[in-house]
Length: 403
Image 1: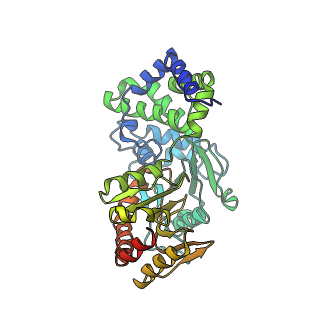
Image 2 (image 1 turned 135 degrees about the vertical axis):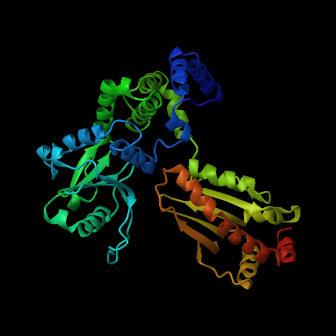
Image 3 (image 1 turned 180 degrees about the vertical axis):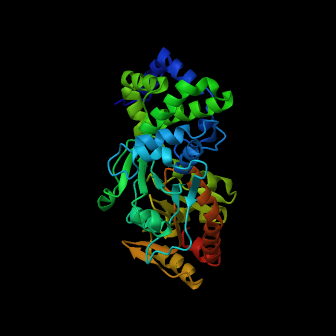
């Protein structure tokens, strides 16, 4: 590993002078609608695209072609209920495709209900698809889905005419081992090969815009999700092998995207000032401008607001750190006199006020996480303002004790 700034610069110069790096840069500059929209890793977008392709009435102009190919391949899978000879008997004119489907009439006792990614409904067969990209099924999730669909389509369930598809990039089995016999493990790899086959045979007959749209999808999926099969992936692998030392250093020091979002929000608040004293990846510390007046500058050694997050939850809290006991007592008194009771206190660290929330999404879905942060920001500001007001009421005491 490089140890000095000059070492890093030399490695970087070698990278920039590598013609493969220029080729990769050119390849990645080629416009791709899915790259532009930033939806390459969002499950809901992939489900939307898949639903569009499978819809015989979709604007792609392929009719039932892709849906038939998908069904034929499905019949060869272990646990599949649909028989290959039954496909031609299905009524494609009346098929329904439902996205993010729920049945409000089916209530599950003591279980969290969620929407089903994609439901394909024929007169005499139903296919339920759960789409997983970069995530796994949570506890009882597949069991809940099956129960909802079974109760909704009782006739199909009794006749054994419901297929449950667990769709992942590589065809992984469900995380819930008890559900593996009920769900068919199916891969995006198969879907991509089916799409490529259709483009090869029918590409010239497609509208040029539709062809490019589908081609872009295949390209971005192979590049971002499968991470193979494109010129860009091959060039990236070659460049990494030739410049492994530099890239390993970069990967070890890459920023946390979620932390950056919080830092951006704090920066936009004119009265907030981030405290660059925490190197912890998933914590951001800051104070308000009023609490950083010259006379109170040292307060940041004893008190700050802290935003903390992990894969499931995030919170904003006020923190009193281990410092002079006299200063701690005044800060605690100031907060408690405003009705902000101490929530936690260990080894000289005290938390008096917080707001906590769940992501309700995968933390890798940056757009959704950003939206969630935006939605919670008003409550975050309420916490800050309430704590700031309590401390400023004891401003004189605080100034005197930190001189």
